[in-house]
Amino acid sequence: MLGAFPSQMIEKLFTAGHIHGAALQNIQPSSLDLTLSEELYRVEGVFLPQRGEHVRDLIDMFHAQSVTFAEPLQCHGVYLCRLNERLVLPESVYAYANNKSSTGRINLQVRLLCDGVPKFDQIPKSYCGELWILVAPHSFSIALQPGQSLNQMRFFNADTRLSEEEHRALYSFQPLLYQFDGKSFPAAEVLFDKGGGITMTIDFDQDIIGYVAFPNSAKVLDYARRDYKPEDFFEPICRLKKNQLVLNREGFYIFSTKEYIAVPPEFSVEMIAYDPTKGEFRTHYAGFFDPGWGFGARGELKGTPAVLEVYPHDHNFIFRDGQPICKMVYERLATFPDRIYGVGDLGSHYQHQRGPCLSKHFVQHAKVAASVLSQI
Image 1 (cartoon, one colour):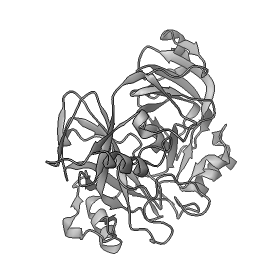
Image 2 (cartoon, helix red, strand yellow):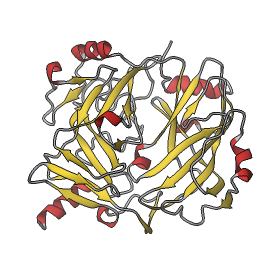
Image 3 (cartoon, helix red, strand yellow):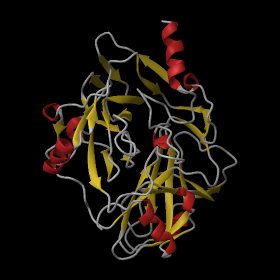
Image 4 (tube, one colour):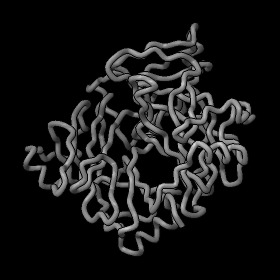
């Protein structure tokens, strides 16, 4: 059984002693939610350990300041937090970490560090040691508490990402992209990437095309709350007359795709975050879609649009309706999962999202959108 680990294989890592300090209830269909410990430091900037260095040894080297969660993490600050989880991986298993969707949608950037690995979010085979994250709020200050989950980890024993030919073959058997009316896109209209993956495009043909937030350290978002009004943190962007928009390089934007994507249960999907050939901007920090996303257990759903977190890099950037915005790469699971996103009692905040849906911290954005439109 080769590929990405589904939930039951992650559970076996628990029982075999390869994962410590975690809770079984944090296992998702093909990932494990990681949780904050009480150990928190403020640091001067983002950093990486060099080979042979332990992250803990760098705390003194970089004069990190010990702080607590009693005060919010300040906008534009950088913090180092130890996670509760610790790994003792077997020699055949490696892992990757991603932001959770709810973290990415509030522009809370999270990067995982592990001892002796000079790369973010990557855990090599046979790794034994602590796990840390760098946390950086970029749009507003964030109030956090120990035990909360900002990122997730996936486990692998082989790279089973599909090639261009395999994506085409899968699509001929099972449509993966749908239109808003539930009809699948013909394969001839799908943009298959030569490097493997399916290109998706931005949707400006809706009443609310997106939201934008600009840095404001005076605003504080409590990560535990679920009742914020979108207008307290974001400005809605209404339908455009010319179907084009200039993105301000200081802004953080929430958009959605025209295509509704479906992920059959025997697959998961990685969204490629940034491709410099497509433009000087970054999309989507979460970058991961569970098996069953937009599909259900037996294909009863006809896709769900992807929500994108976008910010320009060095310059303002002009976006137009239908512009390619991201690439989805399907990868095979090692075996069929015993948990499927959005099925049964498994929580799913975004399975039925439509349009540029904000994170679970905000009240239903559709009601807000209707209110905004009534005032135009």
